[in-house]
Length: 498
Image (cartoon, rainbow, N blue to C red):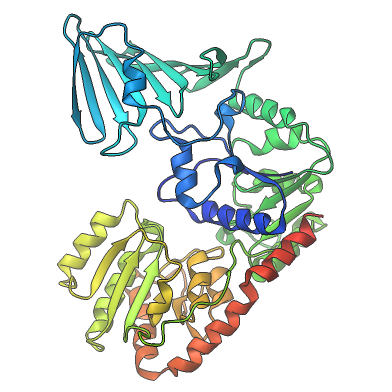
């Protein structure tokens, strides 16, 4: 079995979760059994809604907190009617408003707030109990009650002190006691005094052998527990981001990224490290030789793959002068720079348009910027979409990111024949952009101002639309994309999972 470890997942998932999804598809294609383990709590949503939304199969997902119960990963099917049958006091009124409702009892100073999984249906995810003005309990459901949280008033607010996890028959599987950030897990025959011990118990319960492989995508808070309890299983660490701090390293000392520091220090116990680009693999290998004296096995496996190359419909073609970018709407993606650059480029190429795909907390600020620049007619926030058959409708992909370990959207863009404009930063952009052949790498240095970054993007965008041989650039992108076809990535995984 291949066990893949991560922390959390959400509606606007990061590149790590999408990398895991691509991997799941590869393993399905190879017929390799695999599980994807998530170790965070998900109090506002059923984890299955997140994992199914991105594309995981329910039987591929293990949630740490229900593993020790007999509940399986599943969508919410528990209904309002199921819940109402459990109420002993039938003297109440129910008022619903979209995804929430309130049950108000007529004879007592208490009410319940109900949270549904969607606006219309009666499927119930969570119920909050309030008595005499105090929150006292929350119940969480999928196809039954999976756990409850218990609260007490403390310093004027509700204080969570206990979670109780249930089996499908309603019996208690175990309890998690919480006190000011500290926690203890109480089983019928065990007590664990930290989440780290709890994770270690979980890993040990997998009964791993040398036939199993553990792939860790995020190690924070779980890495040490996994290594201490994995037995003879093979361990792989996926390096998703820059692995060291260039500004804090010199000829005698290197500052590893703290997300990887522990596993780098334990490199002698790691079977293999995975980077998504040859450039990062080479840098890591040389650094280990220089600073540690010996390099571990570091292999290159792209975090994603392309099932096939995608071409525009002959009768439709690409929309002239159209730019596209796709990412989380997050500060580090510098989409404001992309907008500003396109606004300036539009002054020279009046047909230019930009569509921005994705969701995130910066959406409102970006919408405001577009309005302020009077660019509403040609720059649009499109929202979250399945991008499978989208990229090939555009002429140019524009990236504003200054840190891209790989760049799944870059891979998908070249897979649709899109030239790319982006900054010359490790490691994704140079992997997918051959300067002057299928796009332009914009030079950067740490002394540059935001306006200089914007101006660099503007020049590259204008250069592409006014000087480049667009057909040749598109062909060069398709040629580059050949290296990322699924059949080639599958072989790389077969070589590692041996």
